[in-house]
Image 1 (cartoon, rainbow, N blue to C red):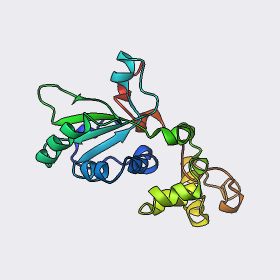
Image 2: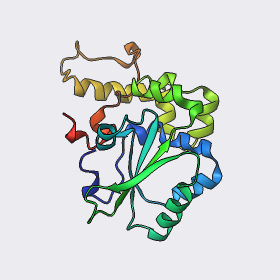
Image 3: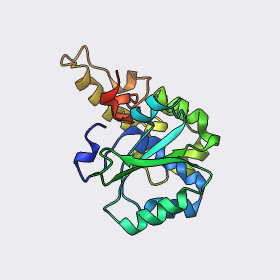
Image 4: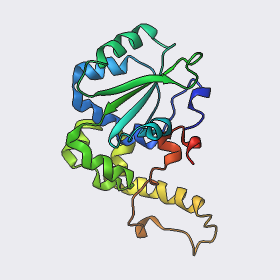
Length: 199
């Protein structure tokens, strides 16, 4: 996540894919407000904040580009600061030049266990069927991972074999034999901001 501010595109990671939709729990007004800002990246921590405080254990860090839809950003930041899910916000990166702003929100308490399960990479244990339907109806790929969909298992074992450099047929992991999760576990490098500053 160290290069997220060097581009004007959305940074795709596991926090965005498997946790961000849970913020729908905060209701329609929240969803409308947050959908109006440009979310460059989301994560489960920022090393700078973790080093200066006791750290936020169950929070979502949302990096917003304030130059895109500035009016909506100003409206959102004024509104979110008085909401119960708000924790803090700060200018991200160079305080004098940055157009990026970080907003730290509490993850819905109801899903704390899911948050911890996510960190372990146990995606199929994160949610029950009702919750998957409630939050992930527009996220078919996430749903496939949660339920260990057979077709997605084929796709994942291909990736796994490339990752493991299994070039010989005998070494290859076969979809029908794979019992594990169908996505790689999250890493600090991809899910925490300023990871490069970690000692």
